[in-house]
Image 1 (cartoon, rainbow, N blue to C red):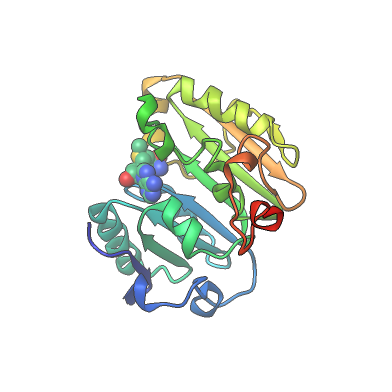
Image 2: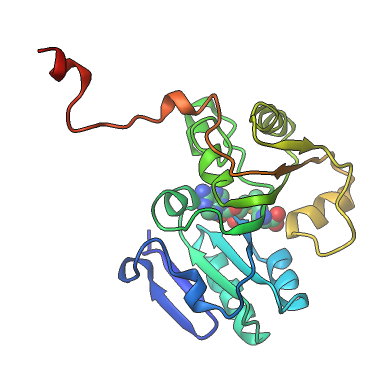
Length: 227
Ligand SMILES: C[S@@+](CC[C@H](N)C(=O)[O-])C[C@H]1O[C@@H](n2cnc3c(N)ncnc32)[C@H](O)[C@@H]1O
């Protein structure tokens, strides 16, 4: 796999040469919260949002190099300067490099559903990954999620509904505005889509299903003390 890359307008750098958490605020003017899309694919939604709203700051993460390169080229050709692109695995980047609490909105549209049970640990929304995604949200921030994979949509709804610090809604559709490549295709086909929106009034904290999976090791554990 090629190294993780980050692109801001003309500039592109390998992630390993940058400090962590990534100093996003130094790269784009403005002090507002960010809108983040995880898995932007061919970038239709992200590019249109960024181009149409030059006063807002956008961040996109995509693991597939060819999509990253395509969207970077379009960003440069269109003169978009309020967008940061990251090529890399979202869960890895969330856990290691991205600052927390930076987003007024996190968009996850038609993420890979990983239907086989042995692959479900790769999902962006499972008990042990949901907190990494929600950790991007600032207090008052919103998560927007859509999938055509009904079973996964049900699982994500269950996870979000079980989070004590989230208010979950199931909108029948999104307001007028740009659509992702997949959403456009599926809307045309009349394919059922699960849409979820969740507001996070305060810092999200840990999900009750995920909390037992987080293990912290201390220098001395209780057994040492009993000896
Ligand atoms: C089914 S496509 C949907 C693309 C776009 N969101 C849309 O609605 O048109 C899922 C995208 O998410 C990307 N993706 C899947 N898992 C990812 C991960 N863990 N980190 C970053 N990107 C991921 C895939 O490479 C792919 O481009």
